Length: 282
Image 1 (cartoon, rainbow, N blue to C red):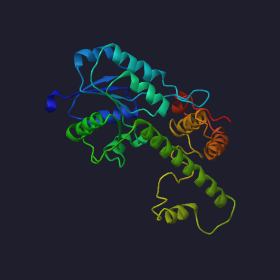
Image 2 (tube, rainbow, N blue to C red):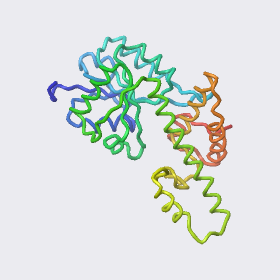
Image 3 (tube, rainbow, N blue to C red):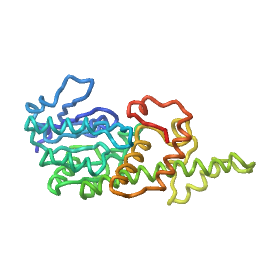
Image 4 (cartoon, rainbow, N blue to C red):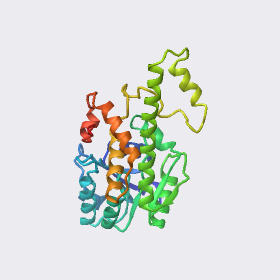
């Protein structure tokens, strides 16, 4: 496949879509976003080799994800008979993935592990690369990254879509739990007159590589206690809701969610939290 004939479509151009855009600098790209005039039906003439779908999944009132935007896109792609691999980047639960995969014979789930403020760098240097779906389609997506992207780590792991989804949710739920854990440890320092400082404590404890340096600062990068933003609160709520629907009680995560909601309800929501219908209520 000559590089000058490689056509890539990106549906959704938020921080994930923009990171994909930057990761394929020499490809012919067709971007469909709320701010663009491009439409899915235009892909018939573009004839893309691959479509990356990077759309939002706002929180429903019951904690589940709202996948209506993504579902409508897959229905429209099928309607116009656009025959190529559809790579979903959005974070969705296994039941939603199963439904979406019925709309196309070439479905690959490639969950993202990106921080919003450093998304491009995180994608290029990501340590975990997961592809899920039909093995041949996954291998084709892997080859596309190898041949056309500027990713540095090209070691991909292939699994089923359900496992890939739970991996994504587990990582985010664990990191959110870590945030809240260090918030509580910080309370010890706030309530005692130690000679050492909180910063000294963090510098020393992160020398244990099992703990590491991430998600231990209090307050966090947004200057607030607890965890917020458009990902962690939504993903924990979605995982709790999904587990409840299959009769699994994630009691520890529920308690973490409740404690975090008590903390974050004291703050004004950010624009991103409002856009994703994030609720800090118990």
